[in-house]
Image (tube, rainbow, N blue to C red):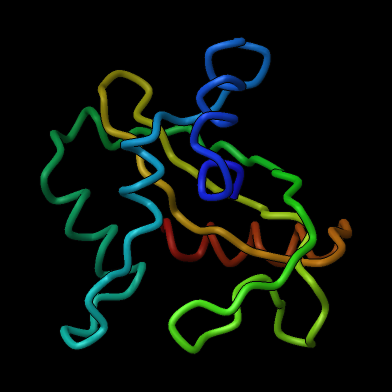
Length: 134
């Protein structure tokens, strides 16, 4: 969200090395839309990506990030961005990413926007991601 609001601010934060932030090319990869006409969902996407890596690179570490974002709602292309399912404004993104232990493979598994992060909601998201990864 910071990068979308101000690329200069994002670059400045990234250059300070205070936070571990992904590169702008990684952000573009994870935020571009998947072609819904072909029915490619998260599971199919990850299956496709994993099929392209070596067997030894399939041993991964699951990383969980909690990212605080500005509370705001925007209308883009006729869609409202920044609202969670029950109508509250998103303030946190719970992100799950996998990274190969011995290789270069890394990928975002899922991003959950939410207005309030609780332990039960985090466990629910974790279980959903683990089911997907298995």
